[in-house]
Length: 353
Image (cartoon, rainbow, N blue to C red; front, side, top):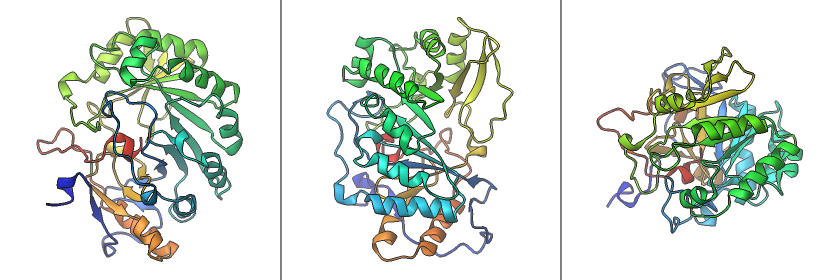
């Protein structure tokens, strides 16, 4: 029986440096992309049970001993910012607000030179009482996941009756000055796909920026069906029933969202078409899991183990070069449309968004 049979991703140890890789200190790949955005999963635990992410009973959480300690995590973040040219840090989960010492991790990251841009993706449960502390620690931007404005639907999708807490969290974040505040929404066919217009009106009325995300094959159940996914094209069609949308002239760069001016602006709405209009060619992301594995792509089937290097006595320079080698081997795209595509063994809650 192999590791893959047990649902464990293949792990790449410290491979020899590829002689074809240029002597460039940054996280470059063989297609000319440069990773400057580090997505950091702080925990695989979550206090919601969203139907498109995990089963109702939850998952077997990562043992604490396998999770990076605060010191280990901050050492890797320091290497990324100081030695590898990372400019943006996004803390994710699971649910990052469940990570003890979160504000301390953020404050230490904000103290690095050069100072990275710091953002946080959260489900918003518990955000109301933490927003001021997060802003003080150094969070620049915030994304809150919310798929519906209806209490019963929220309880059905997430299997928890916590919509009021999320709405309070959004308001608390706004009061704490955490702007821009983006709302991430996944439309599910036959569940909440009639809420595109109401959700955008809510966002505009409250000064938030709404982003619709195509449902991706990252659920723990491996039950994703492309035919059931609400596509970006369908989202746009629904939005145009209530608004006039024109392309945002702002340079997109490596941002995942296509942005549209709403009724001429200044309000905007974003659509992330990861499946139907992939943006792999401009990808600038590298990913670190809560147990210290580097992933070059959200849909990667292999990982590179930095935790073993940390705990095995490797120097910062050695760890940095292993990280560079991992990113040099990044594939051209996620391959969802390839006949042989296989969903990652880890679900989104364990990878980090």
